[in-house]
Length: 104
Image (cartoon, rainbow, N blue to C red; front, side, top):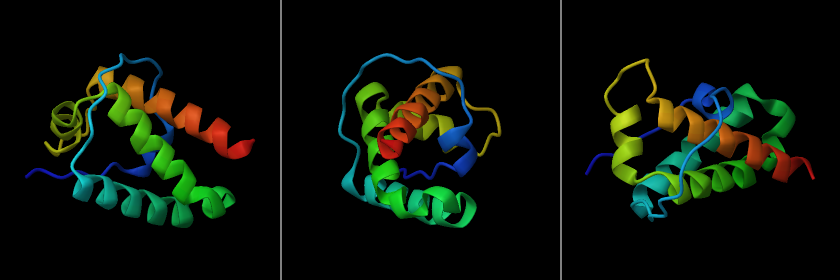
């Protein structure tokens, strides 16, 4: 089974948009993502470190609502530095949505 990690630049620096395609991701992939995301935020964005679990949980939920697991795994699992435009768009919108939620 293919698993993935998104780097912090994908979490906060991508363009907005996306379409709804709700699908649950494999539980181990979600757990791996949330763990890596939380660690990255605590290290690289200390201003939101206390809310990193909330942010990362929100982010993966947003991705699951708009991308199939196969779309996401293909976009981040090939080792390319180029991110698929659809994934970029969905990730940026997710980052904005989740940042807004934790800042309320």
